[in-house]
Length: 377
Image (cartoon, rainbow, N blue to C red; front, side, top):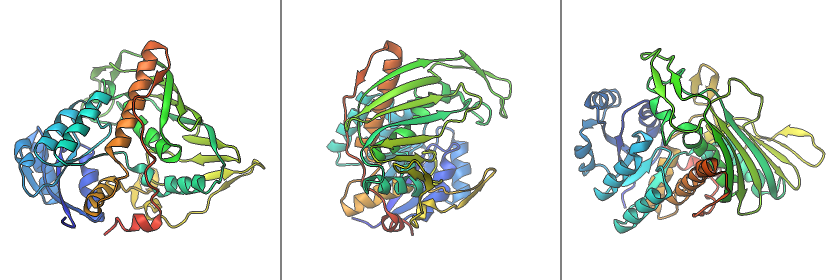
C-alpha cells in the first residue's frame, strides 16, 4: 500500500481549520480537496490551505482522495459517512461517530463489505498527559481502579460559537458533544463499560445567543443539558460522570481515579496536555514527572496561555494503521462503544432505569513517546 493517503475534508466550518492546519505535521496524510454544502465556505478553505474546492459529489468521486474526514454536523454524520463508504473511501469522523448504536453497526457492516476502515475522534486521549496517566496505571501506580469521578460543566456554547444551534439539538448537549472526550479517555484508562444509570434535566427550553453575528437570537433546546450519570465498568470500577451546560461556576476536578493503592488526578480530556498528579497510600499528592511525550509539548498560543494541540493525531494513526496493517487506536469499535455509553446515559435519564450496554471493546494500544514521534513528519 502507498505510504500516504489522500485526504478529503467534508464540511468546512470552524473545526475544519484545525484539521487543515495540523494535518501537515503528521506522516501518512496528504490534503487534497474539500467540500461543503455551502460552496463559498469550501472555496475559502481551499484558498487558505492550497487544496481544491469541490462539490460533495465531486469529492466523493475524487480518485486522489482515499479517506474522507467527516466534519459535518452530528445529525449528518451517519448519512455522509455512509455515502463516503459506498463511494469506496475510508472514513474518519468527528465525534460523535453517529447518534445511535444501530447507525454505528450499519457503518461497520458497510465498511466490512467494501473492505474499508472507519475511525473517529476524539484523539485527545493520545496526548502526553493522558498517555502518562495510562502508563502510570499500567505500571500499577494506583493498583486496581475501583472508582472515580468526572466533571465537565459550564454554561454552554451560545456565548462564543457563531452558530451554536446544533449544540442544543439531538446529537448535541453535553453528553454527545463533550462526553466523547471523557468516555474515550475512560476507555483508554479503565476499559469498556458494562451498564449505566443517569438523571437528566434541562434548565431552560430556549437559549439566547450572545456571540456575533447572531447576538440576541433565541434558539430552542431539544436535548438534556444537565446529566448526572453512574458508569459501571466491566472490570467492576464505578465512576460518576457529571456533564452540564447549566453551571456558571464550580470547583470540581475534571477527572479523578481511585485505586487500591492510591489516587490519580487527570487533566481535562478535551485537551492533549496538562499536569498529571498522583498520591499513594500516604495521601501525599505529587506531580508525575513527564516522560518526553511529543503530544504533551505546547505548540499553540491561546488567550489562556500555551497549549498542546495535536488534533488529527487519530487520523494519522488510522492512516498509518492502514498502511502497516494494524489496529487503529481511534477505531470504529471504540467509537461505537462510546456512542453506546452516551445513548444509554440519555435513555436512562428518560426512563430512570439502569441500561446495559450492547457493545464492548478493547482498550486502545498505549501510545508512548516513541510511538507518538513515529506519527510525526
